[in-house]
Length: 359
Image: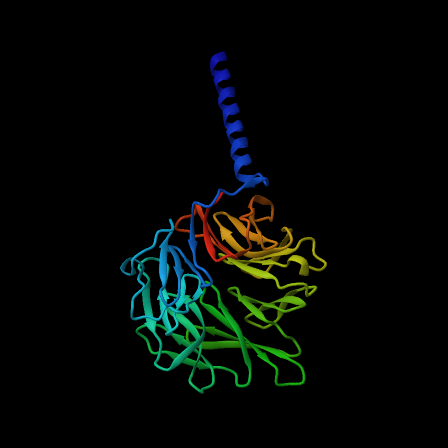
């Protein structure tokens, strides 16, 4: 009996010590990220981070796998009949210089559709299942919104005349909202159009208010301005809450499943923290994050960000620092590939991409 009791206590001690060691190496704020295992030089070219690797557009485009090895055109999908000189990215979706839309979620890259001849895509919003909302224009024509899906006729939705397009966003339930600025009157005003599929289902007009960014939740929208963030109900257009901002920098907004993380940083005013976690129903909680953050992304069950342009931080979701690293140069971009969750890609000011590991 005494031996069994001694063995039980020994097992408990081992488990406790193991837990403490795990906590130290995983959650110690003094831990450092591993050194780079590979480096890719992209020079001054833009870079598209994708689940299967890294696309470097240009006249001679290149694709590197998650280990930094170059891939052949056949393996990567960089076909010669597409202009890869300039590529715009939204999530895992790519828009090439000749207005072709590609799915970059796996390799080889898959062309989803070519757009109508003569149509220039000014902005695009992936909607899942190969559907897109486009803000586009024909040569010398007025820009308009259009819903497109391969195999179906495009649906032209028009756009308010004389207004300036600022952006659009969608929620997982298919709701879409587009933001416009009306600067034709004595003071600027805001106009928001709501869509579902290829049909407009509502609108919101805000006189004497100006916002530069919009984020969509299933039943609410966030409008971000220089001096406030406001949450509106999509159904009735009523404000749910507003948070004042000092105007010292732009908030960072990160989508995390059905909720949004709004990092206010130095622009926070009158809050207990400097970040808002906005839930799917529009309600929010506050947390305190380190100051000076940029390039905020998801990373495993954590977050990653750049502090003061030169320090890489891995954070808990309550803002506590778990790990840090200084690559010795400015950091201009971050990407965490879900397909290889042990990796973290860092774009440096010198034009390199570093392949790091995560804690």
